[in-house]
Length: 229
Image 1 (cartoon, rainbow, N blue to C red):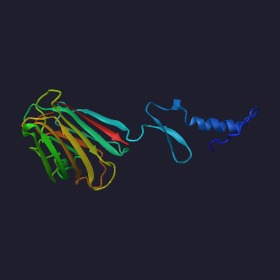
Image 2: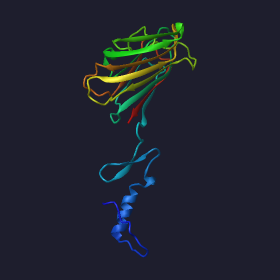
Image 3: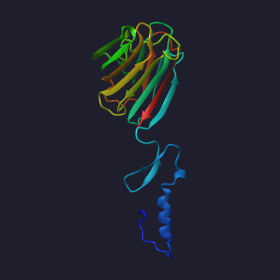
């Protein structure tokens, strides 16, 4: 139905039933009582509109997994309806030293086939270490970026924030970025950043995410995955 455009009403005008129905139908498209919290009014480009979830860069929580007591966690069936994935692996510690974490999508052969570069800063010696190479700094042992805190103190547990970009595409290589904070038993506080790409995904969209501890089980920690539009 054409959007009403009459703007020359004068006192005494009487609207026809067709005109009233036209106004009612179109105005109801913007009826706020039909929307849920957080939705925004969105044009469809074809002369109509509707209320849709979120706005630009909206985050939708897709899954939450408690890591405590587990060795390996794989979240499968990740929705393909978003542009990027934002993942946090938070509040981790494990009293056995050393204990390392592995993080990768689609199992990805444990993520060994990756390219990465980045740096980390450690308080022991106040040094900044840069690196570049294959075999992925998300999976290689004896790496301060992967070594977990052995202390339960809330301010020194290990935390990861990860972005997987264009995860639902079928491009052979998918980019990622990772930030790590927290304590490392040998080097003290370690803060670092890694950027790179996964080479072993083939032309498959990312629909699962894998987390593993190499020694014992996670004493604590939470894995959360968001879809970002």
